[in-house]
Length: 451
Image (cartoon, rainbow, N blue to C red):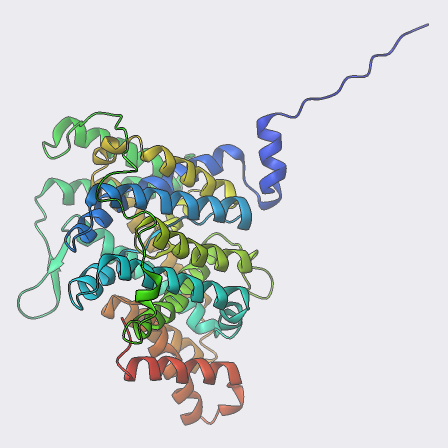
C-alpha cells in the first residue's frame, strides 16, 4: 500500500506580490515593477535638494525640510501604491513649493505656522473635493481633445524642465524667451548622448534601459565631473531639531479671511494641475478603461490630496503626483508596486541623504526627455475629423509649455473649445459640465486668483 504525503506549498514573496498588486493581470513582472520604481525614484530624487533650497530661502530650516520632503514622498507614494495600486509617485509639488516660498512667505509675509496651516486646510478641502466625486466629475467632463492635449503639453513641459536643468536650453536676454545653452559643456554633451543611448536601448527592448543610462551617467559623473562628489552614505536624521516644523501648523491663523482666498487658489490649482498629471501618466501606462477613465482613479485622486494634509502636519510643501512618474511607466511600471518601491526608497533616503548628491541632473535629464518625447505621441490620438476638439487640445498643449503652467493650458483649451463650438454652430455638442468648468476656470483667471 502506497502512502501519500500532503504537501502545503509555501507562497513566495514574488507570488504574494503578484497577487496583491495584480502584476501578471496588467502584463508586468515583479522585476519590471522594481526597475520602474527605481527609475521613478532616481528621476524625482532631485526634489530632496530643490525643495529644501527653495523653502530655505523663505526661512524654513533646510535640514527639517529635507526630512519632511522624504516623509511626504514616502507617505504619498506608499498610499498610491498600496491603496490605489497605481504606478504614480507623489512628492512635494515644485510649482506649489515655489508659490509657498516666494509668494506666501516672502511675498505676503505669512508666518511659517500659518503657511503650514493654509497647506493643511488646502489638503482638507482638496480631499473633500476628491472623495465627493467632484474631481472624478471634472475628469468625466474632460473633452478627449483636451485630455490628449494635456498629455502632449506635459510631454513638452518635461522636455523644457529637463533641458533647462542641464542648461541645454536657457533663458534669452533679448528676442525670443529661450535659446541654446553652451553646447560644449559636459552636462549638455552627457545629456544628448544619454538621450540617444536611452532611445537605442529602448528600441532594443533592453530591460531597465532607462535605469541603466541613469546609473551609467551617475558613475561617469563621479569619475570625471568635479562637481559630483562622494559625501558619504549614512546620515542620522534629527527629527527633533530646533528648526523642525512637525506639528507646528497654525490652523486658526489660516482661517483668517485674508488667508482663505489663498487656500482656495491652492485647491483650484491642484484640482486641474494634479488631475491633469494623473490622467496623462495613466494614459502613458495604458491604465485607462474602455471609457477612457483611469483604472482605480478615485483612489488615485484621493491619495495626492490626503498627502497635502500630511504635508501641512510635517512641515513641507503641498503634495502632488510627480510628472516624473512617467519615467517609471515608460520603464514598464503598471502597478502599485512601482510606487511602493519609490515610497520605501524615500524612507531610506532619510538616512542616506549624502547619496542624493551622486545623481547629477544630466543623469536623469535624458530619461525625462525620452518620456517627454513619448508623450508627444498623444497627437496621433486627436480626432482631426472633429477639428474644434482637436484644435482645442493642441491649444491646451501649446500653452502649457508657453506659459509653463498646466492649469493655464487647460483653461485656454476649454475656452477655445466652447467659443469654437459656438462659432462653428456645434453648440449642441457642448456638455453642461464643460460649460461649468470653462466658466469656473475663466472666472478664476480673470479674478486674479490664478497661481
